[in-house]
Length: 529
Image (cartoon, rainbow, N blue to C red; front, side, top):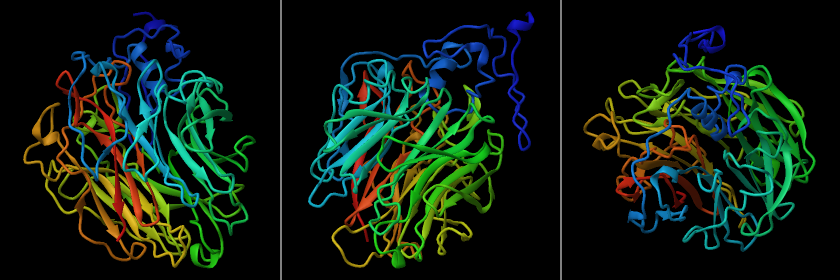
């Protein structure tokens, strides 16, 4: 094999050396993929660390990872419509399991008085793009998927990584995804006044290496930055994944700030909730960005980090959250050993979600390897507006070995109806507590799961019992979508809460095509304690 065809070795230091020579004997010649990525630039672009759809597609087209095998086509052979409280969000009918990936969701409720609109933005592989959007006008009792996909036009090819918020000051919805029309792999936005009809907007950031963006809007009318929107992301064109935030007061003009110079994985933004500042944030409104030092990837130990801004995103300081922790998961993804895996298909590095409550309390939940099982849900909180943080506690009931818990989301209730804000917290996650055997291969009984949760009535001071949010045990969906990398079932599910209900979404496997469970997005409105 000549020099041009030699493998490249991906080396991650200092924690874990993964000189795995990922490409094996596969040639890495200059070859342009359909995504516009040259195969010879895989190492330079850090594609193995990126978790977006464009990177995965390029790696498959370059032969670095194998495409999933399609297992049949035809109409949906079973559609077990969930009864309330579980509602199917992604109700586009699939005709082939090889193009039916609907997962990775972000849900938000309108803040407008007497408006019952809920919008869910998610990944949906269809028509050569990866965007799906559904809305509800009855607080989530029913959902309609918008077809054709509203975010599949005007910004080129949509590669997913969904975000969505409602800006109360501007009385407008904003949503975004990674798109080719904003520099090749930048962040494109759309706007709506009703959550149903959308128009294309600005590029929040134009670039060819953006990844895993998150979004938060300051809906606190007492804040000096009321109405300001924040978007964070990793830029793999800068130091192998530097962390950035951009902010805007109108959705059109954006100001970029570098938060971390090295690769710290962007997890999610949050900030001071609505209400008088004396009761929400000890007088100083703040924005919080959760990140993770992944220790070089694989099953290396991790470190959670929170960045805080007290001046509307102009400057940021950081603090570590608790000790380093062991990676959640059974193994690493066979297709890309940088990512840890929940068998058989779920890549997950322990990422969670932060949420801010009243009186300067900030919450964060994440997943890590437990004392007796491959994954537990850990929780930390700050009671001084993000300056210091508690030691972690485990939220899930104890299990053993293969009874894994992973990928938590967090929301704190806000009442737009007035009255004192109590800080009711809901944490939910994927849960295999019912497993009596290990999950090794698709179809194993031990792979099935439920969506579980736990709630606090008092801003995280005390917690109630674990409870099931999904109303059945869910068959683990397969991943034989040939347009999506094989080790994937969504990287996050971000929840919100309003007026006494937490709005929770997750990847579900109750719909089957040709007898094969496929990925769909489910929703539940969970009453707060």
